[in-house]
Length: 145
Image (cartoon, rainbow, N blue to C red; front, side, top):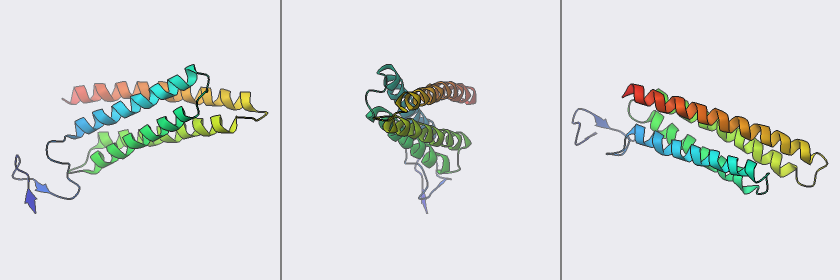
């Protein structure tokens, strides 16, 4: 087994974080992806669902954030904070994909107003929940420091 240079008592395993990368930094990058996804959902609401690509892009960003947090959560000795963030991002991915599907099925449908309204409600819920939980996460990390 290899030893880390700055901490000779720790073993380097295939699930170790790269040297110089901290889990807190990975969570911050994933938080940035999540906030960009929330921005895409907000732009989607403001433009009255004109572009179907925005919720799909938000789904992709939430997926990247979920995978990044999942890798950070299981690296080294593990991190409950990263695993919880990953679970939250997975749920946000599912919600954002539902918004995308509702918006995609509403084109040319007799139920277009209802489907767009459901997509609007779902997007607003996703935005509010993500912003609240992001603030809780930031406060939790500040307290932990």
